[in-house]
Every structure is written in C-alpha cells, then in structure tokens.
Image (cartoon, rainbow, N blue to C red; front, side, top):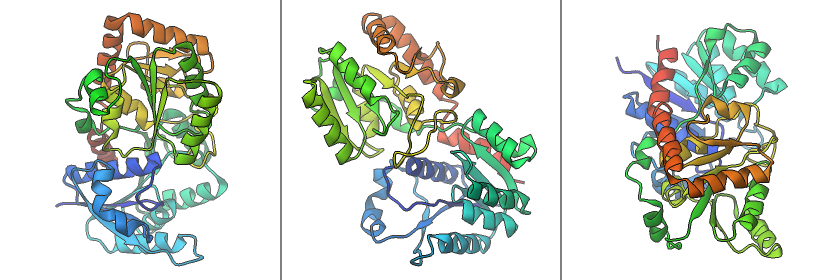
Length: 378
C-alpha cells in the first residue's frame, strides 16, 4: 500500500534561507521515492505570484503537492500548525515529517506516525513541545544533522538513543552532473575565462569568514574571487568596504537561485568554506559552529573542485585530509598557504576534488530520504 508523506514547515515560500532549499529538496526526494508528498506551509500574498516559478527557483524536477494555509492575524502561525495537523490526520496512510514543531507535536499526539528534524539548539519552548511530541503515540524518531546535536538532545530529552538518528544535509547530485570546466563556466557567466578563480557561495552573515576572503584578495591580487550569496544590503556594504581598501579582484554576485548555483560553483578553480568559531544563521543570530551541517559543503564536494575549509570539529564528520585542505579558521597565513599549494600542485588539487566527489555520493537527498524512511515506516 502506498504511504503518503506530509511535510510540515514553519516558513512560507519562496525564501532565500538555506532551510527552504533543504525542505524543497527533501520533499522532492520523498516524491521520487514513490511516496506521494504534500508540503504544508504558511500562505502569504507574496507566495501566489511566485508559484509558477517556484520549481525552477529551487531546481525541482519532480514536483509535489503544495498545501498553503493562510495564517489568522495575531495567532503567530499557531493556527497554521493546528490546521496542518488536522489536515494531515485526515489523510489516509500518511506519515508526518518536517520542521514545524508545533504541527508535528499535534500529529504525534493524534497518533499519526511522526518524525521531526532538528537543526539547531533547544530553547525552553522547543523542549516543552518536543517532550510532548516524543510522548505521543505517533512518535517514530527525531533526526539531527550532526552527532553533537544528537548528544545535546539525548541529554535534554532523556529518550532512548535509537529514537534519535543522525543524517547530515545533502546535495541534489543530478544538478551537478556534466558541469563545464572552470574556463567554460566562466565563459558562460561572462567572466574572464583565463583568470584563476576562487569561489565562495553562501550567506554573508557574521562568522562566515568574509573578512578572511577580503584579506586573501589583497594577498593574491592576480586571482579573481567570486562570491555568490547575500542580500542587496550586505553586498553593497561589502562593495563599499572593497572600495575603501582598494580591493579590485572580488566580484559580488548576490543571491542566485538554486538552479543557477552549480554553474557559479563550476566557475571556480578552488572553493572556500572559511567558517569562524561563531557562526550566525538567517537573521544574523545564533551560533551553529558546534553542530552545523552546511548544504554548501556537499554542493562544493559535488562540483568536483578542491575545497579549503576551516578545521571545525563538526565538519570532520564529512571532511578530512583526503578530500579537502583543513586550516585554522582565523589564520590568514594558513589560508594563503593552502591556496598557494593548490595553485601550484594541480595533480594534488585534482586528487582532493575527485575524492570529495566520490565521498559525497553517500550524501544525496535520495539516499538520505531512503534512510529516514527506514525509521518512519512500520
């Protein structure tokens, strides 16, 4: 008998946050696994004009059902959670999953088989909802994106270890097949095809190491630095900082859709992941350095380009000396030495890139979903 997946999320679509890409890719992977999937999200006037383009925006080739629930003013989306839970409960042969804690607390209490994804640290209200969720007759499992996050919730919730699974983030590997060479990609993007290029993709919040990149651009004035991501205000601030420091070899692209991202990554000869010890998330708040699992890490690996990354313990769940160069996060000299090594040792760079591409095949959305389904399906 075919089971249905009801994925409950707390934010509307589309959005620039990485969590929105995660949710859309997960729903596509459930759909591709032959589990008819519906995504329950808050409705808003801004969503309606974007619906026709939403699949292209997120690089979705296998669409699924969107269930838009218009919030009642002043209820702070609590009504969305309850109405989503009731709609899910009314669906036959359904499994509830996702990141809307309030909605999934209710589905678990109502007896619907339920799993919940954890991507950040517990707050008092989150722990209160989670304790109710795990006591519900529908509770099946929690999924965290890293081992430290699992340990944190095991300590806080006091549930058996087999009820919390670790599944890192992932990549839509199909979008990274048959990428052009760096030279060809730069030609397509109307960049200088012959200029050695170092790439970065992601947000521009505090702790992402953009200051490290600015310093590296001054050390290597003949190398082009290509930065993708950030909102217009952040990009403009950094451009002004570039001008004030007379830095001429950085191009800020700003936000691009997930569909466009592979080509920009392919344009780089080296990809940087200069996370610092305090890493802010969407809204420039929090600190995820202990338990993060950044999607861009897997996208970098899939691009088949050598990676230089900050040597942060949680990243070593995926990265190592065989598939990347790991350096001290705030030591610019370490970063410069790594760039110099990859620039002059093409065979070594290719070996790292090929190993990263090989290793990332474990971390695809389709394989992630297959493993999670083993925890959810009776």
